[in-house]
Image 1 (cartoon, rainbow, N blue to C red):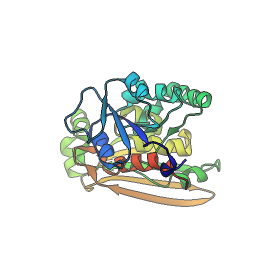
Image 2 (image 1 turned 90 degrees about the vertical axis):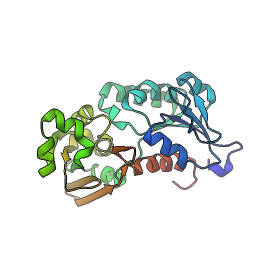
Image 3 (image 1 turned 30 degrees about the vertical axis):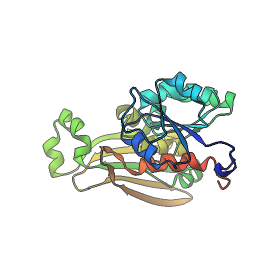
Length: 264
């Protein structure tokens, strides 16, 4: 089904109206009807957008697809209900899927209803290449997240490393993708996205506060018998939230609209 072939406007439900949600709402075409699930009705909702008080109101509104742009908690509370009604969900907070029970539940729901949980590229790219390389059992993936110290101010203060991070890089975590996302559910969505493409056991993650970088930087190395690939993404931080890359909202919108295009 293409957007042009629909008899009525595409209806996109939007969970959350924070930094990412506001950007998503602004980026969606004017021809798209938007229903926003948010605790209150913000004064800056886009013209024509409808504020929805809770998940029941969202489902009653009848979205064709739902974009989650809130938090891991909101994802866990709302996404299963949408998927259970056969509504596809495009998720920003994929870090929530470090919870294996939640992931298994969602996979079971999708299998039963035919709905799909869409994991957009977000702040990184090359997921098709990673998934293809991961078909070989000897492929390994290393992911390094580098962000300016300002993005990790609370964490650095808790570690007593604020001054050290002004002088040089400080490693906040090194280990597997599932634990990284559990520790930083709002900030390590990219690591979980890569792990979902490659397999959790294939991915090693390092999280770094680095005063030498001005942008949120993601470094991926894929290596194995098929060859070695190195990818680097340097994203501008969202002006409202330095822990989030500005491109994340664009990725959510692109993934959503692509589901209704003939060319996949």
